[in-house]
Image 1 (cartoon, rainbow, N blue to C red):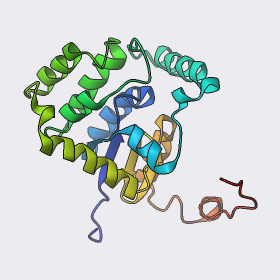
Image 2 (image 1 turned 60 degrees about the horizontal axis):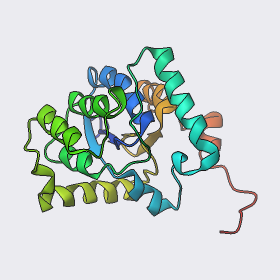
Image 3 (image 1 turned 180 degrees about the horizontal axis):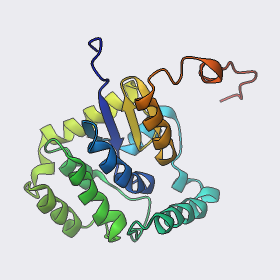
Length: 213
């Protein structure tokens, strides 16, 4: 990055994530102030790379996850309705989102279909509605180059250390999750946020014990 040049902002997301859906209003505010690149990725690919399970794949977490996202949506006045089933296969929608460069309005349109209207994300009708919103052909996601783009996005995210969605990258710093957005804004206002005091100490905190894997 050139001296004095602001760091690039990249938002990694998957339509499978209700927390990413709830972060869209914050991204709309951020995009009014900053240039942001929107990067669709396959969340399942991130989970596989880091050996994680998604919260909806852990039985004890499922109900709490859905309750908290519905509660946040209701508290913030965000129109929100979960799709018929979750987790689901997001590939068709993600590939459509990889056909061209995206704006925050494009991402908002995708999340509105899945988490606003609660449509079936695996139905051809939902894919057609997204294609129409994006102004692309309904068959555009079948292009091998588009499929490769989604794969490359996911591999690049893993290489950057992105382990979950949504993640906002500000240069090399990663802000994972809806609840990290206030800290991301604080970092944009003060790029030295992590280099002194307790922030610097906890950023390099050693491990005292490690469980066998």
